[in-house]
Image (cartoon, rainbow, N blue to C red; front, side):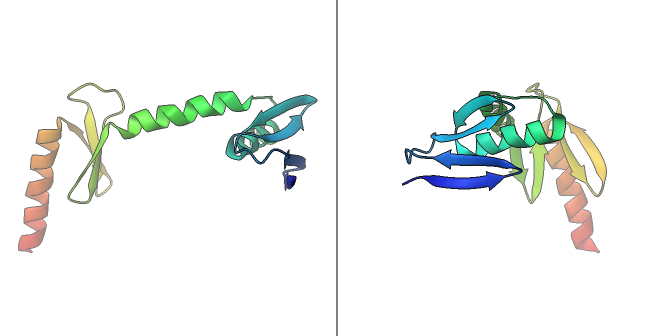
Length: 119
């Protein structure tokens, strides 16, 4: 059974039923990949007027998964580290950016939370 979708002026179809079997033509170039990646290629073409194959977007998703490993939740705050260096962690607290090691940031957050509980 063929499945067809219409996204931003492009027909997308899957005749195989496979998750990676979605096909369309962008600017005369046939592409085939997962539905989300095909839609991203179409969006890129419509917004930028430049062809970007779906494989390029698959690599972007894996990079965001790597940065997700460099984050930590602490008492409702998200400590993040984009560079991977040990003392380049940061968190936003009340619109302010706190930077440093995870231990120093946690110590400061504890002090702020204790001060708020005393009020």
